[in-house]
Amino acid sequence: MQHLAVIMDGNRRWAKQRNLSSADGHRKGRDAARLAVEFCVKNDIKYLSLYAFSLENFRRDEEEKAAIFSILVDGINAELDEFIERGVRICFVGDRSRFPEHLLSSIQHAEKSTKHLEKLQVNVLFCYGAQQELTSAMQTIARQVQQGELAPEDITKETIEKMLWTAGTPDPDLIVRTGYAPRLSNFMLYQAAYSELKFLDCYWPDITEKHLESCVQDFYKTKRNFGC
Image (cartoon, rainbow, N blue to C red; front, top):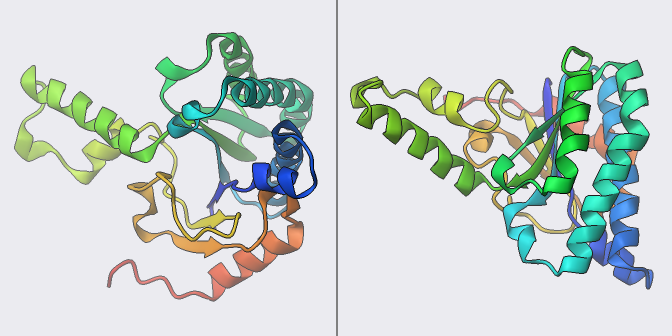
């Protein structure tokens, strides 16, 4: 396996069960994300994609969004030196026109500081939505056709993949979702065409190394036919 993708669902419900704030749930979720990074480094998985903040999440109240953004920035700053030491590259994937301005310097610093590292690439899917990603790709291709740079008959699967926000990252081998919900929620819909899916009956802050080990072991037991 070279690419593990995770839909980190359940932070708020985890916090509600414990009479804690949503921010407490997101902080605990950040700890779980660090565990996932450590798991991938330990198991020589080259790519980890974490669904951190969807475009639909912008509908949440301002207080919660501010808390999520603050936790994200604090996490980047706190973990960056360790990521560099471990050879972890950080990439933010999403609609960059929607990235909150006050986060840009931290995001750009993290990406620039780790761009040469190759042990593990962590894709933080931020301000991301798969339908919006595909719409953006189609708009780019349409502009190229309109400008005479590309003929319609020359549009291929590879053409589309180069226009996706995830360009350069292989499709996920395995997608794991926590939170008791068996759905993809606008996550990597194009890239998930032949991904194995695993839905866990736990909230993201409760994820353990054993959970991830079990998911990976099940993956290796599965015969992948890719439609054949």
